[in-house]
Image (cartoon, rainbow, N blue to C red; front, side):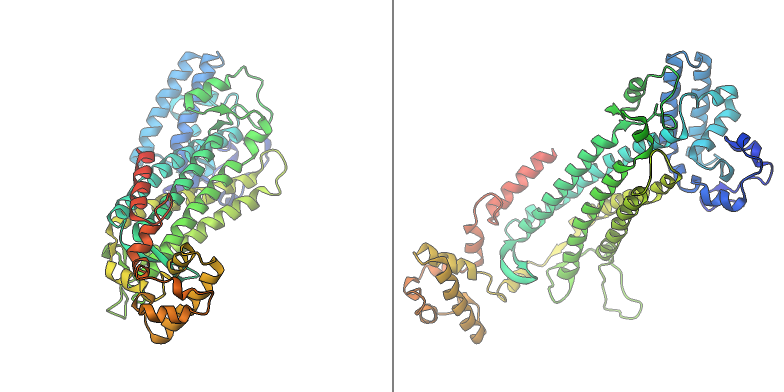
Amino acid sequence: MTHPNGIAPGSSGDEQTTKAWSGRFSEPVSDLVKRYTASVFFDNRMAAQDIRGSLAHAKMLARQGIIGAQDLADIERGMAQIRDEIANGSFNWNLDDEDVHLNIEKRLTALVGDAGKRLHTGRSRNDQVATDIRLWLRDAIDQAVVLLADFQRALLDTAEQHAATPLPGHTHLQVAQPVTFGHHLMAYVEMARRDAERLADCRRRVNRLPLGAAALAGTSYPIDREFVAKELGFDEVCENSLDAVSDRDFAIEFCAAAALTMTHLSRLSEELILWMSPRFGFIDLADRFCTGSSIMPQKKNPDVPELVRGKTGRVNGHLVALLTLMKGQPLAYNKDNQEDKEPLFDAADTLIDTLRIYTDMIPGIRVKADAMRAALSLGFATATDLADYLVKKGLPFRDAHEAVALAVREAEKRGVDLPQMALADLRTCMAHVNGAGERLGDDVFAVLTVEGSLDSRNHIGGTAPAQVRAAIARARKRLA
C-alpha cells in the first residue's frame, strides 16, 4: 500500500540497515514515530531544488579535489536518471528514508555506488534543507512577481476602459464623493505595485547560500562556498554557520508579504461581492467565476471572491504559525523546523493560485455604468464641491461647511439631490451663515455636476479622467 502522494510506507525489516544514522541506535524507530517524523509526504516537492543543490555541491567537491572526477561524472549521471524518474512518476518515494534528501541520496547510491555515498561529504541535512527551501522559495517569489505584473496589467486594461466612468466613492460605506471606476481600480494597481516591491526585497534576503554551514559549525574540508553560490545563482553566502542552518526569518518574511498581498486581494474581493449584490448592482462577474444554489434557481453567487476572502485568513494563519514556530528555539537547528515547510508551501500556492485566477477574472467584469451614476444621486456626492465653491467665493471653510450642511438637510426633506434645487432655494437655506447664500451664482450648477466634480480634481493622484489616464500610462511604463 502506498500513501496518497505515491509514497511507499517502507519495509518492516531491520531499521538499522535503512537509516543514515542507524549505527548509533540499538533498536529501530517505531512505525508510528516514522510516520510522525517523516516529511517526505510534503517535502518531495523540493526534489528539483535538492538535485540542483547537490549537483553544485558535487561540482565544488570535485573542483576542490575532495572527490574525484569519476565520482562527479557518476553523480551527474545518476542525478540525471533520478530527475527523469521523478518527472515520469516512476521514482519510488519511501517513508523509511524520511525526507526528499535521503530518498534521493539512497536512490543515487543504488545507481552509482560509492560515488553516491561520497556526495554528502562536507555538508549536513541541516544546511542542505536550508538551501533547498531558499531555492524553492526563490522560484516561488519569481513566479509570484510575474503574476503580480499580469494582475496589474489586467487592472490597467479595465481601468483604461473606465477612466471616465463615474462611481460613488465611499467612506464608512457611505457615499462620499464622485470618483471614476478606473480611478478606483488604480488604487489596487498601487497596492499590487507595493506587494511586488515587498516580494522583490524579500527575495534579496532569501537569496543567500546556507550550504557549507554543515550541521552548525562549518566543515573541516577545503570547500569553496562562493563557487557554489555562483553556481546556484545566490547573491552571497550566509556568513554565520549557526544562523545559516537555524533561522527561517526569510520564510516568515515571505509569508508576511504574501499575507499583505492576500489582504489587498481580499479587500477587492469584498468590493466585488458588494458591487455584484442587487443592492448595489454596479457590476457582474463572468459565469465561470460564480456558482448557483442547490435550492434557489435565481442565485448567482460570487464564489471566487468569497473564497479569496476566506483563503486570506489561511495565509495569515501560516504567518502566525511560522512566527510561533521560531519564537522559542535556541541555536542551532531543531526538529521544530521541519514544520516550516507546509505553511510556507501552502502560503505560496494560495498566493500564486489567487493571482492567476484574479488575472483571469478582472477582464470579465461587466460594468453597469448607469447604476453607478444613479447611485451618485443618492448621497449628495457633490456637497463638498459646493463647499469648495463657496470658499473660492471668499467664505471661510467652516462657514461653507455649515451652509452646505443646511442645504443638504433641506434637500433631504424634499427628497431631491442638491443639483435639483432651485438657486433661490439654495440661497434661502444658506442665507444666515455669514451671507453664504449671496455668494451663489448660476455657475454653481456646473460645480454640482458629477463631471464638474471629477474634472476639478485635476492633479496627480486625483480623480479627473485625464489624471487617471496619466496614472495608467505611468504604470504601464513601470511594467514594460
